[in-house]
Length: 367
Image 1 (cartoon, rainbow, N blue to C red):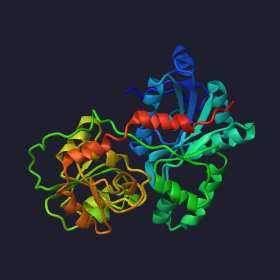
Image 2: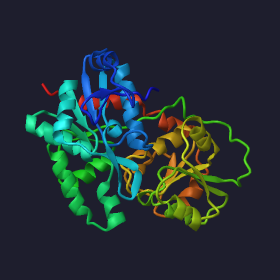
Image 3: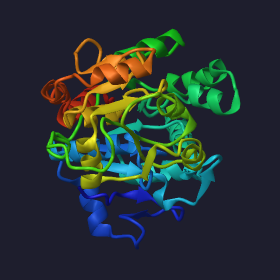
Image 4: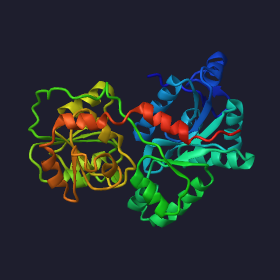
C-alpha cells in the first residue's frame, strides 16, 4: 500500500511527501479518478502506528478503489512539537487560515475532521467561519486517558469534546456501545462507522516452534498507561506473556515484569507471525473505542480474553470467539478452549470495503 499522500506544508504549498512540490502528481490526486474529492484532516498520521492511522490508511485505499479522490491534511509537512508525555505523537503548529488555504486549494466536495487536535480545531474554526458543512469522528476516549494520567475529571473533557463535535453534521463512532455512551454525555448526530481487517494478511497458520513455554498469551498495542497493561501482566498465568508494541511505559513495565517478553513494535509479516504464535489474545484496555487488534487476532484464529467494556462487548459479545469477564485470569484460561475457525469466521464479518461504504454514507457534501 502506498503511503504517499498530498499534505499541506508549513510554507503553504502542497507536497507529495518530504520532497519538493510535484504539480502533476498533486493534480492527479485532486481531480481523478473519482467523482468525489474528500478532504480528510487528521492529527493522527504516520509515523504513528495505531488503530486510527491504520483505519485511515485502509479507508483511503478503499475509497480510491471505489473511484474517489482522498486528500489527507496531516502534521507531516507542518512544523510540529512533541505531545507532552508522548513524544511519538507530533502536534502541528498551524492556524485556521493555513488550514483554510489548504482546503481552498483542494476544493473538496466533502470535509471530514478525524481528530480533536490542533489540525482538527483549526479546520473546525475555518469551516465554521466559512459556513462549510463537515463531519467528524470519535476515535479516542481522551476523557478517560486524561483522567488516568493527570486526574482531570472526565466530565470536563467530555464537555470540551461535546463542544467540538456539536458543530459537525454527523459524528461517526465505531460501535454501538460508544454511541450510547456518547449520547449519555449529550452528544448528538451520531452515526455508525465500523472497522475492518485484512483477511489476506492476518490468517490462521500452524503454530511455529518456539522456546517460549505455552500457552502464549499475547498483547499488541501501545505500551502506555491507558492500555491498562498491568491488569494483564499481574495475572498468575501458566506459559508466557508476550507484549508487542512500544510506548512511554515500556521501560517501567519491563523492569516491573522481567518474566514477560517485551519484543517491541512490529508490523507486516513480523506482526502477523506473533499473532500466529499466540494461543490467546489478552486485551486489558477499558478505554478503547474499538480495538483493531481484536479483529487482527480473530482473523489469525486467536481467541480473545477481555473485560466486558466497549470494543470487546461489540466485537465479541455472545459470539463465542472470546471470553469477557471482570476476572481477566478466568477469561484468559477459558479462552484456551475456543475453536480457531470460529474466530476466523467472526473476523470475516468485518471488511474494509463495508467500512468505507459506511463512511461514504455518513459524509455530508459541502455544496
